[in-house]
Figure: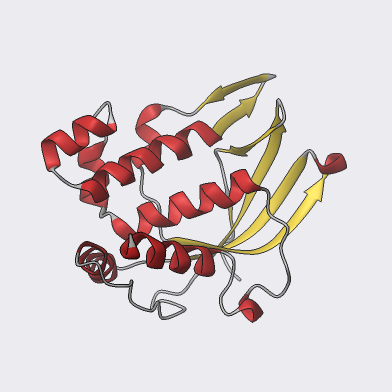
Length: 189
């Protein structure tokens, strides 16, 4: 339980800015988006691209545990399914969930929300997000710390390759926030 509490504190603090001066303001983020960011950062920091590729062949979290014996990978799989359910393709008046295989694509790094802007009477919002790339050694270090029941190590920001900047678009669909699958990526900042 200590492992999960420390990890939760780390992921929430990083996602929404820690120390608070990093975020620049008190962000009013809907709970679905908070949960999405937490799950996304959990997957990005506690699974390797090879593990995510392997997980794409499983159907259920129980299958993952049965074949790997890893509670961590079972949780990664469950969080990936959660993300998949919140990402949608929107176009031509048709809204549908993302392709199942997409949930295990390259996540690129840990996301930190910098700003939020509501549009269209609050039914659409744009998140300005900084993505800090994680190197394989960092991910391996996080996994090791998590599995040894230690607290995750500190993240050094920015990473040597520098952060990337994206804008995510979220829309309310039947009263729930859903993320548009495509993000806007800035080439230079």
